[in-house]
Image (cartoon, rainbow over all chains, first blue to last red; front, side, top):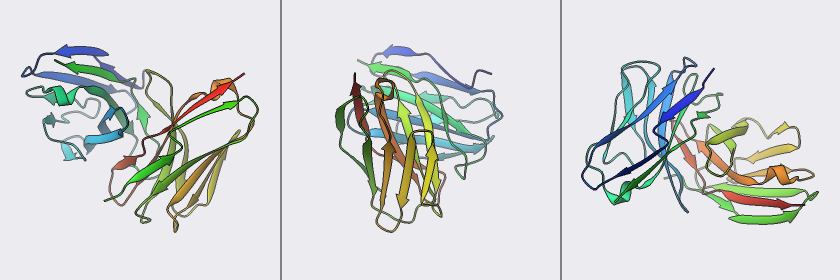
Length: 114
Length: 111
């Protein structure tokens, strides 16, 4: 049972490039989310999804797109990378929403934008 | 807008001490509160989840309390060990499917 898998673990981009951070879970979780973690600012929610075909914005959605075509996958797309998007990105999932269920986190993807 | 604050930002203690980590939030209309542990370079691991109707939760040497009316939660770690060294984060959920995180307390327990 792999849990939440994020790829790549590390990525360096130039300003203006695009890329996709992949997130996959094998626990049949309905809820999936993306956070970014910056020094001194804690984790901030970018986008989340409560099920296949449903996505919504979090606190800091600008510059990021998501889609949820399957229950297992929740990719995060950076359309035109900016230095301000240098951060560590975490994907997390939960069986059904955030009721009594805890979040399971991936190991993170460290992105540097030059 | 919900804001979550954790004090202290960093803490260094000798092994065996009992510790209290603090978490405060500005909007008391929360659904639940979670405490997480994060090891360097790793993701987060959930430690305890307290529903808004509960006062505390315990797991082994960890005890988390919640005072919703005052906007506070504490994480109590008994008989600390070097293996407890990590960053501890609290997060609150309001009436949406969003978690708002604090900035964390970085704990170092030395032998």
